[in-house]
Image (cartoon, rainbow, N blue to C red; front, side, top):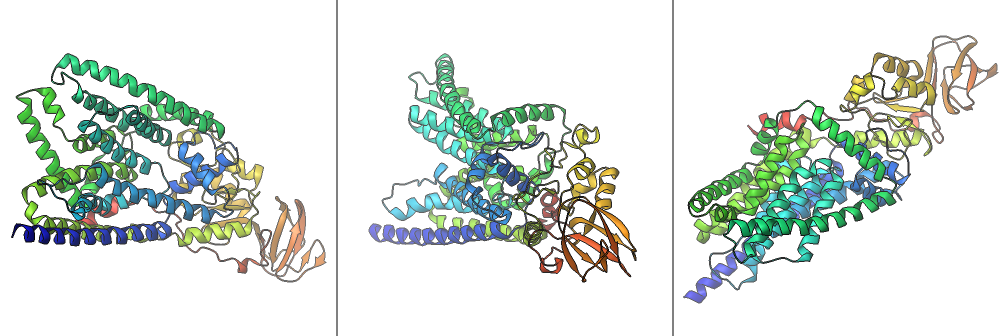
Length: 591
């Protein structure tokens, strides 16, 4: 009878394992598909364009951050000629990092059975169950696969949980210290704010190492162990940091990184602060199952902590689950962040996910006999919540119009031409100024004329194409907008090219500011010579005379197009959505 019961239990566990593997496979495919079609957040072009500047050994621009992922991303995409290829390749890579990070939750905090088992199937689903719940968290799907640094912080959080949990069970040597140093360097060299996550994590790691000392309950012994371990970790971190900075130096980006680190410090101490409440509310409502499980973990940890506190405060700290500690670290890091935007939910969600695994363990400890039902219900409920989030208006917008814009700009220009847009969308073209980016951090200096004005860029460089279809153009001064209106004409709601509009000209003179091919429509004569309509001509810089009996238009057409009608032009009026949209839109949807 006992053998039959164990056989039936193992069969059920294998069925649960198959269910979870199928769910993860579907979610992985969905992540890859979503990453390849969902619209680009306005910060992604900024990152991708910086990667290309780094690889070209160009000045990345005043105040523009240059981090380790820009160097690595530039190496990956340098052989791809089109900006659309840059985005697709990087999106797919980041989506796989996103999936592996969430799967890592299962390895960092697997489920343990209250009784010994020899079945291989349960061992598999012990890992798959927390990972599946992590993958179905709506909050991490908002920005989890975007081309940004927050994903590396999320991976660091999960890696630290796994490392500290392993260190709490058995002593770790220099291999563990080097791994911790690698995590620290990757986190810090990809985000200036990462120290708010890894410093507490390293302190806890050093404290946990003291559990294996001979007098682990003695205050003096634990303090001495903590100091010595912090010294060893510091040695490995300094060595790993030197290696990472050497990579930055080899790419010619070290000075830019250190310079931006100083700018970030100044910004963090003087910037206006945003409330973190919307971010926490979004995390709660978009990932209700995970936050519920994380709350259970926190509650259980508090009860256990209060019981042990009466015996020994050192022992009480030792009983704190690593995953709960890391969640608290993530919450504090979000609180000290001057401007917690929705993309910070990526690493906050990692903290929630590992704590949710701890909460799942607490539930299964009580209802182990009903583990299959508990896991299936939790995964199903979390998946339903994810479906509601990914079906929201903001999450269903595609990058089709953005890709059309890129294709049109590349058709209208050559690789050496400059494009002015303020975001760096067309990463395959050059920037006309080192102050190429429009960003809220820089607008104060812009208005004080500490940064080059777009009007001056236009009148000095005359880029053949400007992209105006985003909200940051509204931040520009009236002089900038007047300069764009004076020299450029729209060919679509978002694309403007060098050109003129003339009403019934007769021997009218126009000034060509940039050498290149232009399409002239409605004119009968060019410099006194009869021409067809429309007429494409390579014009030199300088004055030309046009005559016509009706309206005459002159438009830059670029190196290859026969007419402007050959270009498939974007028709959207907005290239980017509001970056606060997840915080503003998902709350009423979820409620």
